[in-house]
Length: 90
Image (tube, rainbow, N blue to C red; front, side, top):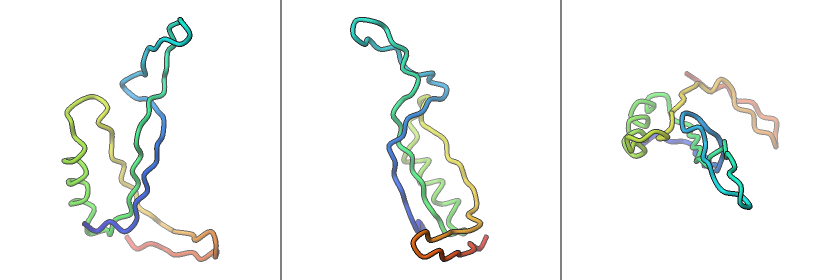
């Protein structure tokens, strides 16, 4: 599909769901953050549209909380170990 790199992270956050109400030691507690999965992919520029379509089809349930896809260009990549910088082409 043109995915060059992928990173999956367990994260916490909230959006329109506004969190949950749970019992903790006999008291109600508002839990604002919910567990979420963050997926970051680096994609060849010509493959952005097909990868977006594939991810959307796989992730959509039609329920609040399906998530969002943010698309942004990579202007530069820096290899921390070597200090090598690479400018990414649009």
